Length: 231
Length: 152
Image: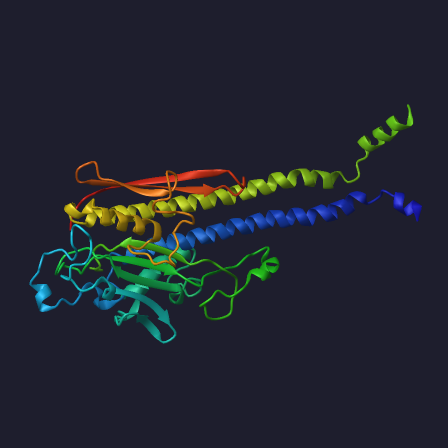
C-alpha cells in the first residue's frame, strides 16, 4: 500500500487529466461567449438597419400616413398640430394617441393594433416582408433569400408607429411618427458548452413554442419617420 | 546539511503538482482577459446605442419649427426620445442603456445646446460600470450629434 502511495509513475498523466478538461472548458467557453456577443450584436444591428429601412418604406399600418382630419381641422391647413409655447396638442390635428399601431405577424397573418390595416400586398414587395428581408440579410448574411433557415423570421418582428405630436395640418405624407423595429423571442444556440447551458433554456414570457436555445433579450431600435414611401 | 535544509530542498525540487500550480497561476489572468473582452463589447454596444439615440433626438428637434425647436417642452421630448426611445415614456419604460437618465447629474444626462443659430447640438453622458474591476470603477461614455434645424 505504502509502495503504491509513493509510486510517482504516471503522476503527470493524472495531473494532465485534471487540468486538460478545465483548460478546454475555459477555452471553448471563451469561443462560445464571443460567438454569443457576435449574435447579440448582429441582432441589434439588424434592428438598426430595419428601422432605417422602415422609415423610408411604405408603412406596414396602411392608413397611418393618411390621418383623418375633420372639416374644421382641414380649414386650419398649414397650422401646427401643437401650441408652440407649451407643446400641447391644440386640436388642429387628429390626436396623437389615435396615430399609433403595433404591427406583428401571427399564425393567422399579419395584424396591426388600433384598427389599422396590415399592408399585405402580395410577395416580397410588401413593407413588412421587405423590412424583414433587410434584417435577415444582416442577421443571416451567410444565407441566401428567402432565408428559410434563418432563425430571424416574421414571427420575431414587430414594427410600431407612434405620432410624436409634431407636424402641421394636412402635412404631405402624414404627421411625423417614431418608428420602432423590435425583435422578440430570439434564441441563441451555444455550440461547445450547449450541454452545460441547459439550465438557461427557460422559455421567455409571451413567446410561443418550444425553446431551442438561450432566450436573448428584446432588441429595439427607434427612428423618426422620414418619407414613409417606398417609391 | 541539517534536516530542515534537506526538507526545504526536497520541497523546492519536487515537481509533482506543477501543472496544477501553473494552471492556478494562469487561470485568473485568462479569466480577467475574457471578462475584459466581454466588458469592451458591452461598453461598445452601450456607446453605439447612445449614439443612435442622440442622433434620433437631434433629428426630432431639427424637424420642429424653429420657434419651437429650442423650447423647454421640445427639449424635454427630445431627451425622452434619446433615453427611452419615445417622446412620452410611461412609468414601466426602461432606458435603452441601463442606468441612463435624462437629468442624472454631470456624468449621466442628455443636454441640448441651441447657442449656434439654426443648429441644434445634442450631447449625452452615461456611466458604465467596468465588470472586470467591480465596485468603484466606472467610466463615462459620452456622445454628441449636431443637426441643422430644417423646420417642418
